[in-house]
Image (cartoon, rainbow over the protein chains, first blue to last red):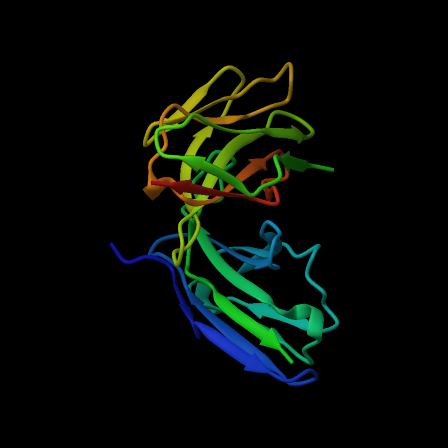
Length: 115
Length: 111
């Protein structure tokens, strides 16, 4: 079965530039998550979608980060402009319905380096 | 708010040794508890879970018991292998349905 697909795998940009990440969740999964994982830390939830609606974006730095999930399937996460502290791995995950005991399926992530 | 505190690493063991990684949590309501694992070069994947007090999750020889009285979900394995070398994350999901992770514990098993 196909897993969660993310691209690109790596990205290096200079500060103040823009960057976008793409995620294709597992087919049929209603819930999609974007996490930020800084080196040496656990993943931190940035935004959670249920179909194409936002469920939680309380930890998304909205002055520079934006995300959308068109048609309730693919999603993009954008950073504009990037700062040095945005260097991290950006993980996309999906789950069937978002239930409390549900398993999340993670993609391999996009490693972002901001110079 | 909800939070997870897990044992700091790194942890280095010899093959066939006993492994314990401590995890305690703070949460409102009755959370579900998880252990996720990240093998070198791979994405995060669920190792085991428990959704109510006194439940025991188990998988691949690993076990963890949901202890409400001590707010803990410690991960154990009786005899580790080199292939168990990975980063282990404790996580919880409470009434707000947000999955919160601990900082992760790096485990290295030597042959």
